[in-house]
Length: 188
Image (cartoon, rainbow, N blue to C red; front, side, top):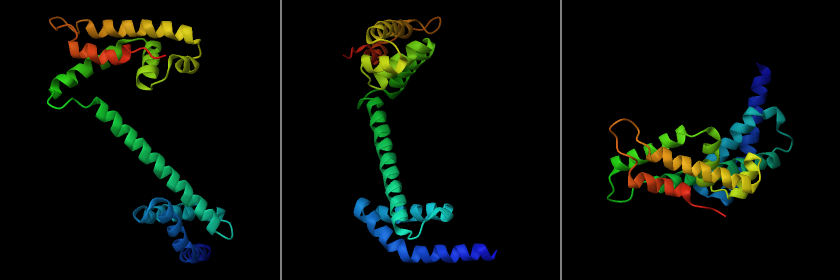
């Protein structure tokens, strides 16, 4: 109990001594609004790892604040990337949302029906944006072999989209075929 109280006093002293300088560092890197959050997260890490904090603590705290800022930036980039991806899939203005959802569902079902190797290649090239030579490195084959596998996977996907889903349904719509067109695009 006395040890806990002693650690709390030492932590409070460290906080009082270093908070303004950590805040100033964070504000200079990310702005005033983000600085409070960075300071809070920095001292939360310091509390969890209090026994690892060296003397003097300021350089260590600034290193933690730097990592917090870096992780915050990465999270922001991920959010922006996700938002950009969602906007790519958003229906065009004035389009029929229900039709768009049905078309995308047809493509997703067709992808699910493909063998795992075909799905992987199509995802690497169409969704991850890798060139065939880069995708070949990922799957561990030559670029020429990957191009052949990619061509075959695309053909199987087109057939899967165009096949009737069940008795009485139409073949894949023109819009579904245009969705597959994204995957048909050849990349050098």
